[in-house]
Image (cartoon, rainbow, N blue to C red; front, side):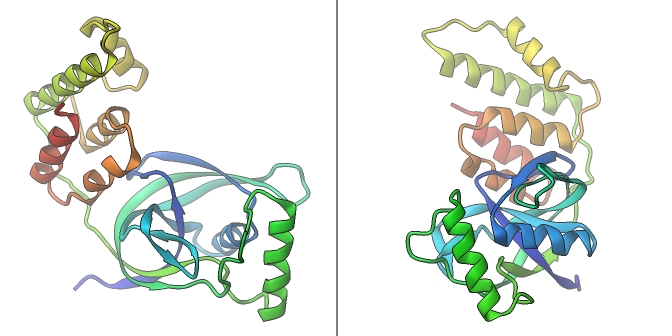
Length: 235
């Protein structure tokens, strides 16, 4: 039986796939605490797409499948502690078994971009105790990676579906297949040796909305993954 562990959770308006890079600008007190805790720990937290239908103590709730992000670099942008820039890379995906709410509920009319909003959160945090966690945590179970190979034939079929979708979506502007080959080159997707990472990247440039990518992340076999990508790319 797969074991579980408790990790910090960062709900975002995006889907992070394994081995993809994700830079983040951190300015909210609760996420600065998250980064601080990660930096004195194993440097890892969970990135989940925001679940628009639910909330946790008033804050954005995460979808139940996400990806571990490993911090590779952390910089204090202005050397004043007010803004951090971190670079991360995706690792394993995981499934949330239990959400642990943050110690602070979202204040009424909270503005995450304002100094006043940050001060309000910091003052509440000091009152309840600075050891309390302001961010969502979750007990999670790791999902085994898809380690199957994809044939060149199946990959080329996905590329053709992607091209057809882009060409149709661009109408009335005419986009030719040759110009789309340059796009594939720019994203390093012109290959004769496709892997699961290529499928994730092709999905990312074929989606209009991050919610379209969540089913791709949740696929646990190569056949299921390809089927869901085909559905995404079929106009």
